[in-house]
Image (cartoon, rainbow, N blue to C red):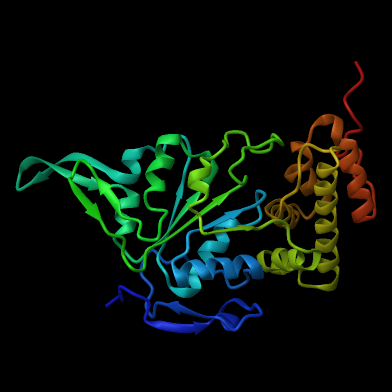
Length: 324
C-alpha cells in the first residue's frame, strides 16, 4: 500500500548534501508519479531550503531565474528524494481553464452514452498527495492564472461551479511554479511570450527564490555529473574552459555586447556534442555559435580563444558579415 501522507522523517543534510540540520517529511514508498532520481544532481542550498519549506510547511514556492539553470529539475529532484509524487504542467498559450478545472464529457457506461465530469489536472492533483509544478508560470493566459489564484492560499479550496461543490485540498498537496521573469514582464527580449503577472496573485506566493547561474566550480560539477567521461585531469580542464566561456557570454550580455547567453544547459550540451564529434570547436559551433547574431560571432570567437587557448578554425569562426 502506498501511504497517503508522508510517513518518514529524513535528514536533509544526507539527502541533498547541503549544510542544514533540517528534518523533512518523506514517503516510504514511491508511486508512478515520483520522478526518477538523478544521482549526480547538484543542489543549490538556498533554493533547496526554500523548496523544503514548501514541502514541510505547505508554503507556495515560486522559483525564478534565467533559462537553463535547472529550476524545474530542482523541484523534481527534491520530490524524487522525498518519494513525493510530482506532476509538471507547462503553462503555454494552449492550456485553458477547462484543462485545469475539468469539463463534462460523453463516456460509455454499460453500452450507453452518459455525460460525466472529467477532472482537469489541477482538480486531480488537488485531491491527492502530489506536488504540482507550473512551468513557464509567466507565460500563462490571464483566465488560467485567475483559476490558479484560487488555490494559492494554504486552505486553497477550489469551487467547481458546474458541479456545485467545493474541493478541499489533500493535506499532502503542494504547489510550486517556475518562471524566467519575476512577474513584471521581460525588458531584455530573451523571453518573448512572457507577460506581467497580477501583483495580487504574486503577493499570494509565500516564498520567491532566485536560481541563477552557479559559481564556477559548482557549474563544473554539474557538467561532470552529466558527462562523467570528462572526469580526468584533461577533461576537467576542458570543462573548466567551457564554463569560463559561458561566464564571459553572460558578462557580455550584461554589458550589452551580446544578445545571446550560454546557459548551464548549453554548456552540458556542448560537452555532450564534443564527445559525439570528438571535436570541441565543431561542437561549439553547432551548439552555440550558430545561434549568435552574425555581427556578434567575432566577439564570441574571441571569447573562445581566450578560454580554450587556441583560435576557432577558419571554417568555424566567421569574422563578421560577408562583404558584398
